[in-house]
Amino acid sequence: MNKLEVSVLMRHEVGLHARPSVKLTKLAKAFESKIDLGLSPDGPWIDAKSIVKVMATKAPKDSTIYFRAEGKDAKAALDALVMLVDGDFQNGP
Amino acid sequence: MDHRTHRATYRVEGRSAAPGIALGPLVRLVAARSKTQRSRSELGEQQALADAIEASKLDLTVLAEKVKDEDAEAILSFQIALLEDENLAAPAFARIADGEAADKAWVAAIDPEIATYEQADDSYFRARASDLRDLRDRVLRRLAGEVDQAVPPGVIVATEDMTPSLFLATDWRDGGLVLRRGSPSSHVAILARSRGVPMIVGVDIDHLGSGVDAVLDGEAGSLIIDPDPSTKADYGRRLTEQAEARAAAFSFTGQVVTASGEPVRMMINVTGLAELRDIDPSNVDGIGLMRTEFLFQEREQLPSEEEQYHIYRQMAEWAAGKPVTIRTLDAGGDKPIAGLTIPGDLNPFLGVRGVRLSLRRLDVFRLQLRALARAAVGGNLKVMIPMVTAPEELVQCRALFQTAVDELRGEGYEAAMPPLGMMVEVPAAALVVEDFDADFYSIGSNDLIQYVMAASRDEPQLADLARPSRAVFNLIGHVVEHAKRCGREASLCGDLAGDPQQVASLLDQGLRSFSVAPGVLRPVRAAIARYSSRAA
Image 1 (cartoon, rainbow over the protein chains, first blue to last red):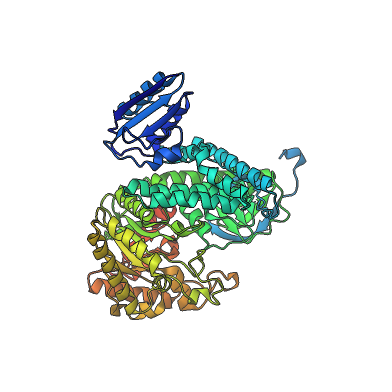
Image 2 (image 1 turned 120 degrees about the vertical axis):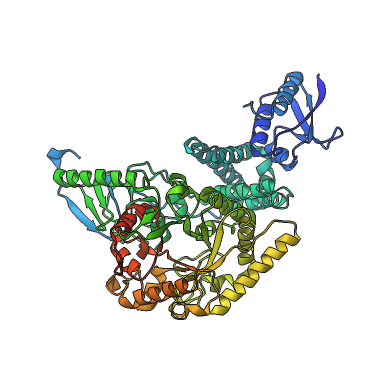
């Protein structure tokens, strides 16, 4: 079983707001793996597929977002999520 | 209706609430409010909540497909995503399992979420609290068995009464509204006039069936069922003229001047941001009256400071430097607001309304003043107080405003004290207007007329009395003259200003500043352009 972790700096000008959060959780839900999100390398970890929890982090601009994924498509999931955040949430579902 | 099988035309009479003509099939809306079953099993409650969430999700999805602007779309997709997330309702289902009713459990699950947003440091996150409240209320309405009835465009709707929120959610293009209840001064009527939707009230709708061919004559106050071909053709022509006149209504540009060359200010009355979308701010001299009551109506909770601030600021941004006159909450009278106005007030028009209510509900008033003081920083905002009767009321308001500004600055916000004016609508204020320390005056003719004439504007039998008489015009002249003497602005924002037949009389009184519903800009401008002053 794959168990992977990555981090990415979020530059989106307003932070993890409604629109970016909707995109992020939609993308996360497209993968089978269990995906967690945190604002520090040690957590606390929250379910990246839950908009309620993702919005509750109220992550401001210039936060580093940590993802960890566990499952068959963990690598693909993290690549896609990093690309979304790195691309300033321009693309994505 | 097929001509060969044409049934006899008949007319149903009502009262005009908004002018204009609509042709189309009649649609009867039936109030769909069913009583909540109070004796549902736990399983029944679980199912009811699951169904209400599912139905709300569908409503929002339909709505999201209809909206055209990106911001509204973003909010709706956020709300849909929230409903799709099991974490949102999980605490509610747990509470139902513990024996709570679905509606209470839902509120108990969502309110803590709302609270965490309200406490956020970031103003953006704080503003999301209202999205959650909206979502909470939507699911609650569904739980109570209420249905968002979709009204197709191009039909004439006949129903008992209509809430402003349903009115606003409806696409009224080429449509019209027929109500049994309501009055020409109701909020829906104000909305209908400002959006150019023909509307009549006081109609016996019992015998009207859905699907019949109909013509609504908003001007005459009548509904014609199964019109014969010549009547239909006649109204078809008037409809075309009306469409052309409307298309031209906003095509005016530049300053309005009388025939003798005197400039006149033309401002608009609005109830919210939606009406501003179709209006080019360069064609008007600003907003003469923003009625804030609509921000407070038809909702579970009063609007937050943040929500109000965003609306006021966006209005100022729309006006791009032109004045935006915002009237503080004018609740009471014919505009009750749940949880705010006093139910069972014996004589609401002479009761605790307007500033009288604000000064008794300082919690609510303070939030509004704070939102206004913050919005005044970036924009050309003016604030006016409704129903001022005694000079002390205005003094109190000014002191409260100053306190709000000081508080905000103490908290690190930018805040400014905008010009503070008064509505002149109570005869006691109009008669001795010089006693009031107002930065500007705005004459509210609807209330002024009914208070001067002691005749309700909602009493059809007194329609001949509840009109602008010489007494009313004398008072208007007195206020305008005082304003001129002390170099302050006096405008008139009641229905009187929007009546082309009264324009000359108002100009005779020296009035040079009008604030009207956007739909009547053109005829009023035309009436002003025809006027030559008596002195000239």
